[in-house]
Image (cartoon, rainbow over all chains, first blue to last red; front, side, top):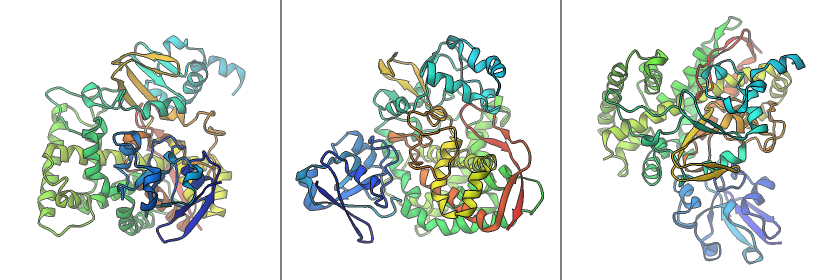
Length: 108
Length: 417
């Protein structure tokens, strides 16, 4: 089971182990990680699961596809950077074990 | 309801081929729900060949609506194609052509939305929260105890107008001008708000001049966290053509006015109709943050958004033709039991209460959703500090509209702790 480490704006860490195939959004919502609402249910339609991927992990998660729905939504999210992703679009695999995702301040 | 009254209910007897859910009276009488229930059951993507608004499709199920929401390549919001409501946007010489990003498609939509969205971003709202709270307290403290008052006028309109005035740092004593301009922006002569398109145009030009003066004033002051100051001082927006500036300001005024106002009233009514839920809230005010999305789902202050098909498409197995008008009925999707458990019950601690359609989804998702939630949270926190009950003491009156689901009158009495 790969583990995701969610890091809150105040530095608090939430390590969550999930089955491969689970999205980072579901991992956060189902385990009560603060700051990830995921209002649309994981459909890439609301940008309430915005995270910043730790720089060291960007090569493995990749960026949001330019011009795609995820990038379209991220451009309106506060504090969006080139490390921004929607957690619902990151599907966990063993290769991503230890993935560090930072939650933007004030997302909720 | 007995079987006899059910049998006579036009919602269950009208032939599907003649069912037209666009009649504003069905919303004013709050009888529309049984029409939508039948459509969800029998014809979830429904074609109405003839109506006061021309032919249109009704999309009534949650997941079908979501499919239209996220496909802006096929389903356009463009004003020139008719825009975002059943009623086509007005053209013609007498109207003032205002550019608003809600009725644009990407990429133009994206650039304009990005320019104004920082004012309602969470970090900016955190700066405004203490001011909104103080003003909400002021409104509530000025209300008489134990006397019948109209909650719509005294609280709902006042609070939302006040919040807009705060977001714009608008001259305080003149804040009801914002309410008026909001009403005028959406008005046609039939509504009685204005007597002619010429009058509408004149009032909007007066609004334009007023904001032009504010713009010039802010340009000569140091930057502040209000919308006008942010736009004046931001490289992305300071050279925006004036009609675009005005159009986007009016969009924010309308968007922030008719919506939250009605969720504030709707919440009071829902809690009165569900006394066990009101008791639950009084016993645990910590439930407020969970209750707010449930109020917004329950009220669904905008009943629908409309799109126009740019190409042939399929929704729920039905063939949509290029050029067709497609109406996403949020009010119906928010009562869809395939997605929402016990959707006809108002449950303030509903799990997963944020999963509702009232803000829309996709690139046009409500930009002000956090302001809406903030105002509702603050007003309920301040109500619970002051009153043991806001008691509804008479029948509410609802808005005559198939777009805005709201109240024009809600008589209440306040009871102290």
